[in-house]
Image (cartoon, rainbow, N blue to C red; front, side, top):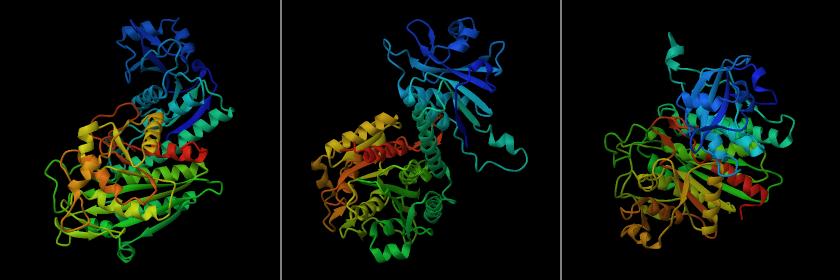
Amino acid sequence: MTALTLSTAAAPGLRADAIVVGVAKGAKAPVVAPGAEAVDKAYDGKLAGVLETLGASGAEGEVTKLPAPSGFKAPLVVAVGLGAVPEKDAAFEAEALRRAAGAAARALAGSKKAAFALPIADAGDVAAVAEGALLGSYSFDTYKENGKDAKAKKGKAPLAEVALLGTKPRDRAHKAAAERATAVTEELNRARDLINMPPNDLNPEAFAAVAQAAGKEHGLKVQVLDEKALEKGGYGGILGVGAGSASAPRLVKLSYTSSKAKKHLAFVGKGITYDSGGISLKPAGHNETMKCDMSGAAAVFAAVVAAARLGLEVDVTGWLALAENMPSGSATRPGDVLRMYSGKTVEVLNTDAEGRLVLADALARASEEKPDAIVDVATLTGAMMLALGNRTFGIMANDDAFRSAVHEAAEEVGEGAWPMPLPDHLRKGMDSPTADIANMGERYGGGLVAGLFLKEFVGEGITWAHLDIAGPAYNESGPFGYTPKGGTGSAVRTLVRLAELAASGDLG
């Protein structure tokens, strides 16, 4: 786990493995960013020219390494691109700082300590640089060989310590920003760990055990419904999805309560620990990353724990709908009808449209507690990836103002998101001659159809939003900025921000 410290030390005298500075893309040449004045002075004011000679342009994510000037205790200077120089006297945006810090942290894997001399004008910048550096330092090598030559096979260890220069360790706002960044990134990285775990180790029961352990550690109330309790309670959706697996499903409720809370939020996460598609088996080439189909539950879990660690003055309940979707003689078949927790019946036309079934039960159960708002998170549809790509999640809601609020929260924390509609005319496609509703509708607009299905199970009068994170939840390409390859922890920061807004009374 990477340590974070605030420092007033000058870059030349600081003992570290590297000094990280920012460089921006100017109109004609790279420009050294604020925070690096002492380093630039040691290069006789010619650092920008040296970097240009080395091929640096200041483009976002670009990393250039060069020997530190004479007299520096750190042997290396790492210049990281911040993108275009802000217009006029504007400051660098928080997301530019996050991404730059993340890129630098990844480039410094194997180092013990790095001092970040990036632009820091206020507590918001402290938070952004800290988040980027801590998220960029993430690695997952739990399953690398631990025997002979283990070090080589595991690769370089994450950057061990991040020191933020230009900060005020005794300033209340700076300290609070650093503490918040540490709590949120540690829980987000725990979500990444869960997503990256192989499904033979993370089945529904194992995930529930992780939640129980976290509950004991952070003072959360945790309730786990096993298959017997689910059957007794009538959770036909969760049971139907898990019917084909040797690993029984679970519904986990995590409750964080504050004595000063005036609002109650419910977060609901899709937790398919492995998705084969069931009887509607996925084609070859579509199974290899399906351990990530529990990313929504991982995000909800991390957000609730983060809310507890931050001591937010809001009640937050997390619902993890956990099941493994497998084909077998006992699996749900296309054409079967499931009686859901709400009492509605669903004709299953495609067993690979399983996420909406487990979410439907959890949404109905969460609605019984009459929270002020419900937000569900799910890697729900390939259609959303076709619509928005692999770095943006879709937001649907039964209230336009709330959808906008969720979108604004996502933008504020640097998560790519876009508001999507729920057209009424698409609902007719899910009409079933056999049951109240089918789990499939029209082919086109499939992400919106899934949202309309979920809307049917939200309690009357309850504000609700649905985040389809199928695109950004799992990064199959190379790492970028503070985003690693594999599980990303998408939506964690958005959920935490929503909880903060609810605590402050700014969520509407």
